[in-house]
Image (cartoon, rainbow, N blue to C red; front, side):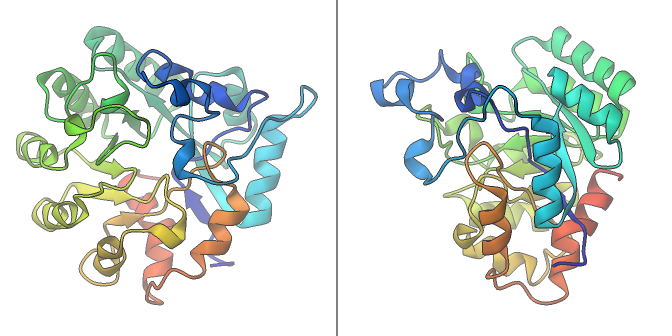
Length: 283
């Protein structure tokens, strides 16, 4: 692990107000507890990274954390001043991506194309259960976004499985990916955030569709689904990619420490921590 040069496919900047990561969900959650939690899935996590003070250089803090933990490059959502600053100053460390909302199809396409032209984004991300209103993975509103990704030769990263925030789940049922992969055979699509409790189906579909992948975001490594670990150790060595969750829900130090205990076979580590990301995202 120490010599690989890890590529983390979900990383971000510490926030002066940590809850700012989740402001987009403010209108979606309904229960009283969710409205006061630092993050809307806080009931699932312990020791969520907290606020940093006003004087903190969050770009420098992120890079220092990456250096300490052996992370060579990290995928960051673009749009904030600090993300642009980081990309311009450290293009060898920052992998840009952009989020897109299928409820605004035209706006989403313009956002993707502009981000690709200005920042050279390597992926588009989306959270179906977090959309208002929600949009299923196989809904027609997503199709122009998928087509744009194919045209630009960049993958789509999209949530799969029961969401952590207390919002409905069916729009993220793993069965939706079957139809999308059928309709877009040239699309590289990456499932994030677990795919549970349908992880066995996720494995079946990855065996079936060459363009379908999985990333381990939002899971402490000791909780990686067994089916995913087993798949990576066998026919899925090229299909499972590492992604963390710092600082949204986990510290980078905890993630990397727990990674060492995951029962991957020796030949899997290089693929999981780096090479699969290089191949899928054309890095």
